Structure formats: C-alpha cells, structure tokens
Image (cartoon, rainbow, N blue to C red):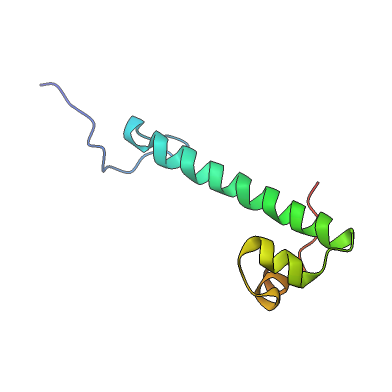
Length: 76
C-alpha cells in the first residue's frame, strides 16, 4: 500500500507546501515593506517633515500617521 501525505495533516512549522510559496512570499514582502515604511516615516519625522505632510504623502490624516508611526522606535 502506498501512503500519500495528506496536505492537511499537521506538519512541521517550517515546512510549507509548494502551493503556499506565493502566499508566504507575499507575506514576507509585505512585512519588509511595512518595516521600510516605518523606517522612512521615522527618518522623515526626525528630519523635520511635519506630521501633516507625512500624512499627506501616506494618504491618511496627520493624526492617524502620528498614532501609527509616531511612537515607534527606529529600526536599523
């Protein structure tokens, strides 16, 4: 009898199915973009760009931009 692996069975956390690769890559890309955006917002704010202008560039109200990024520590 040949046993085939059921893709819905529990598997190691580091193992992903081939069908999951595009989803995993997109999630990693999004995380990298969010990290980069947070860094750029922090740099802009430290350089004196106003929260009004940062909000305009991001397409959100200044208050929302400040609430989301204002207290975040700078990542290196």
